[in-house]
Image (cartoon, rainbow, N blue to C red; front, side, top):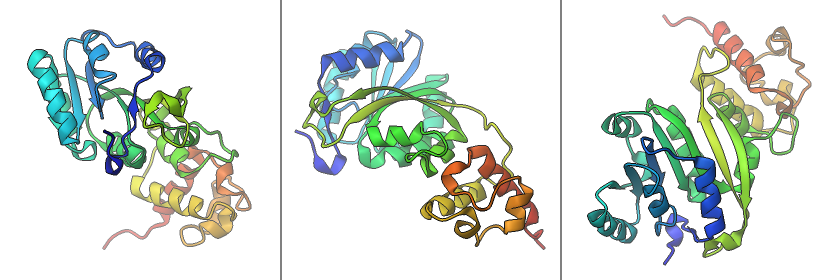
Length: 262
């Protein structure tokens, strides 16, 4: 039975499962980690493709079922815990290699988990996640669009996101009230230098918290009109017109103007 507090919607559509497996294209020696295996719709077919599989599950009842499966199949490594609190760097060291992550993520933890994973020192090759479609739309949005915003910019500074395919509510039990989508996220080195990553995030957050305002007004507490213009950016633009690199130039200019510590 799905538990509302964990945001559980269990995948059961075999066509969707096969499509996820196809896009993941797991190899035998992949260090694969499944987040939120639930009732194991992906777990068993993944075990057929890799030499060893780690799964992370928070629901004790589901953990008990997974551990019974692990008794029959010792190549299954069951980790009970909150995916937001797992030490992925230690897990990668334990698995002796770069991780590949896959999972049907509860909607309520998707964005925090993504940023926790990208901030982790763990070597991660890629992530294939099922998420709420509107979240995926924001990840892959182009500047100027309605979906372009804080998530697009902050994720784009650290990774490439690719929308793979949509999944209807009927593929789950119980069915969610929204469409879902599968996304591939590939971490990468930043495409630009950041003098102060925290300042970059703060500036992006401030800009999009007042996205109907121009940069001149939305960022008045951070940066002067003169500094915006010195970065070759029009202060009359709205935040959704700027690329991640534009925001990086602004953040670096603000950092350069900050007084040196005593």
